[in-house]
Length: 200
Image 1: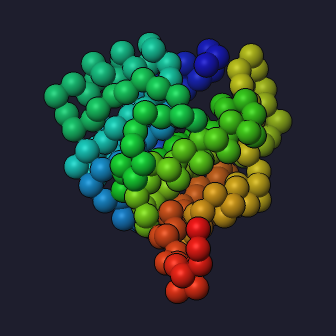
Image 2: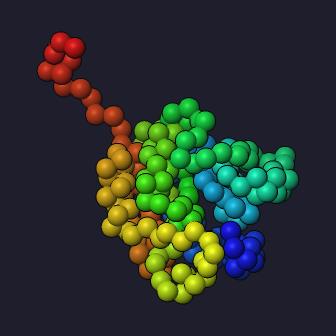
């Protein structure tokens, strides 16, 4: 994280933007259920909003300093802070009703790693569970803002194909000043009688 992010992400202005323009729109399109995973919460601006809307919120963060700060901030609440890699978490499959990733995918340096994260989201979601998120769109200004930092914005069309290929459905993308998206993990398709009768 470069100095620009160190100043912006913990700021009240950034929290106000998430709380008023991003999270309410996303949450209005899905049922968050009771148990939610947030990937890459950083300083916890979205975590603060989400924890009042679910029974249990797990915040998965790879940065040790951020984990320590988050753990102190949310001690005694319904937030569990965990250090880990979002491409290969330690959570059992079908553990969460919802997963959120807010303005973090563009910090993932390669498309392959972004796809690995989305695949892992699909693994830990329960069937019918919601994946919600937001991200920055490519621009020259943001490229300069990320000087010295990973900057790999995902194209909305690429994200759509990725979500569909990894078993998500009911996908909604809103492209404006930023990218907002919701998707649901598909329910398993029942086997046909013929498939059940075929020898293995």
